[in-house]
Length: 120
Image 1 (cartoon, helix red, strand yellow):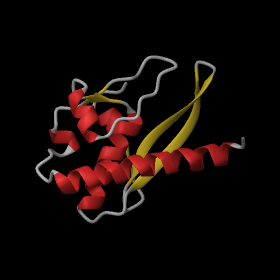
Image 2 (image 1 turned 60 degrees about the vertical axis):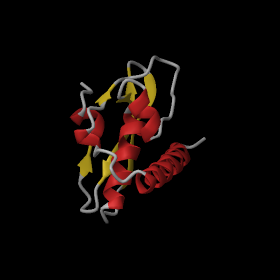
Image 3 (image 1 turned 180 degrees about the horizontal axis):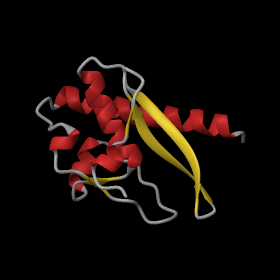
Image 4 (image 1 turned 135 degrees about the horizontal axis):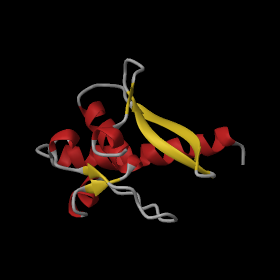
């Protein structure tokens, strides 16, 4: 499958997680903001990729990886009126094609919740 199609599919999957997170934030408006929640980045073991919504992230020792954190951040930004969206970056790390999800803010800048929350 061409790379651009893989990226588009991944963006669509992240958007679904954003939608779930927005529904959660609407139902639970006192949910802390991502950066105030105590959540930290934790890479999943190789070959495993669990996609977590906000309540799942909070229940898993307050850890998540890039798509979990980016989807939470995008949802909270949208809830505050900003037109944020997923920013997918493909790269080869140790010979393996990987994707990293960040946040494209309404002004076009890129924010990386994973780096903000402990990814090295």
